[in-house]
Amino acid sequence: TEIYTLSLHDALPISFRNLVAALGLALFAVALLCGGAVHGAEVPRQALAYRSTLIRAARVEWGLDAPTATFGAQIHQESGWREDARSPVGAQGLTQFMPKTATWWAEMRPASGPAAPWNPGWALRSLAGYDRWLWERVRACDDCNRLAMALSGYNGGLGWVKRDAALAERLGLDPLTWWDNVETVNAGRSASNKRENQRYPERILRTLESLYEAAGWGPGVCP
Image (cartoon, rainbow, N blue to C red):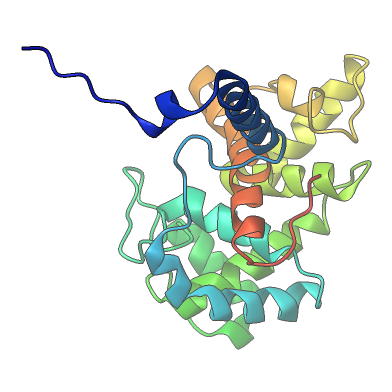
């Protein structure tokens, strides 16, 4: 004997089912346009333990309008909010400072204390400060492009950002625009390093930033 079950969807009039289907497609389109978590991404639960520390640190360096959602997205990309994270090349802690970079930053900012990349408080304060330091040393046509260049510097080194911008200008591209201009050229890195560095601002600013904005972490910088 065959048993047939009737779902709520099947019980609805055809015209109403069509309306529901159309509404579902519309909501999916809105999620795509707004950068919604259509790929299942979400703010890790452990991030909440560090949220207030990050926001305070960012506002000290950047003011009350600090792009705190961007920094949350950056840490998400760096370590997934795991304070014991270690990369294959030796980057350490929440913000994945390399040991030499951590030591250099501590010398640059003696008030922050000795280098302590495994310490979440030191790591979060240093990420906000180092991002600001990079921001002040790049030029761009708007804040979104400028922070993309600063993030590229965090990931691959400020010198490469400047060399790529100079090469972009020689090739007739806009050296003040990261997206589709500076990001497309390579002044000498290996292809794999260039791909990683290109994707780093892309994922933070165009995928994860909106996730943290929607979760109430404050503003980002990219529309």
